[in-house]
Image (cartoon, rainbow, N blue to C red; front, side):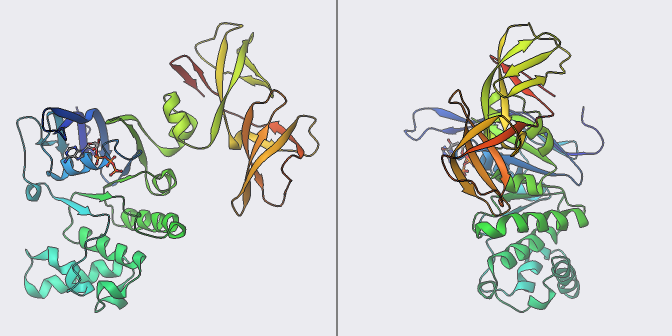
Length: 362
Ligand SMILES: Nc1ncnc2c1ncn2[C@@H]1O[C@H](COP(=O)(O)OP(=O)(O)OP(=O)(O)O)[C@@H](O)[C@H]1O
């Protein structure tokens, strides 16, 4: 049963389409589950074609569902036998290209969704929302006179003004410059939190997802594989696919030692596991770029084989004596040449291991 604070609940959702040759059906979403509480920001993260947009369209009421249920405020709005129309759902949508009306000025764009209010109220309410996105000085401007980031804020104000229960955003940063995206994701989060807005967005960019969302669902092949806080996804990935998809890391071989430890080429790590592992068993250990620290005084050496300058740090690809390549973030004032050997040590304080399909994460 849903908790009283759950706003959106999706259970066992399945959606299919007519196949391109028209002869059968193809499944786009299957067995998808998630819950979003009031005031929470959720994000579906996955590569192209995994079914993200289909889920948003189904929540809006634009896509019929084959099985499962979508509930808003504990009311079924979509199932195999129930289908509320989009305007019965109190859901707002922000499209990828913002879809502002070019012939209306900013204030008129926002007022457009407020037809239910008397005329004298519409401009006042639209102005209030324009102030909330810090654009009251642009009320008379037309969309083409605004920057991409400003257009996005107008689109947000327009979606928020009718005070829907839930706002859905389809790739809200994809038409903006890459450098802007993370900053705008942070700004959007602040606007949603300040106005207690519940929102669900989709993106294929994990940095955007992490910058904005309280809960992120990693999607693959029509399913949400893990629905969790960004920190949990990074540090406690539920399976190998997620560990691989999130962050920069590699899997290295380890041997379980007595005392619940694991030995890898770089040293020993505590498994700290409730389920003790069989001594001598070979397992895989996830090593992220932030688990390796550069240390000039370390006797453990690795060769720089690749490096990417990221401003504050370099992402080094380092080759160990065995030939295994690992990643390390190193502050950018440590500028080492390709081919140079540098000292490193292991700083992993949580160990993510995989044995065949099973996983344990600490
Ligand atoms: N109208 C349609 N008819 C047939 N198949 C469709 C239709 N819409 C989507 N699909 C298929 O359903 C699957 C999921 O599509 P969807 O657009 O939801 O993915 P997505 O994760 O949002 O991708 P993207 O990031 O590229 O937009 C894809 O395999 C796609 O080809």
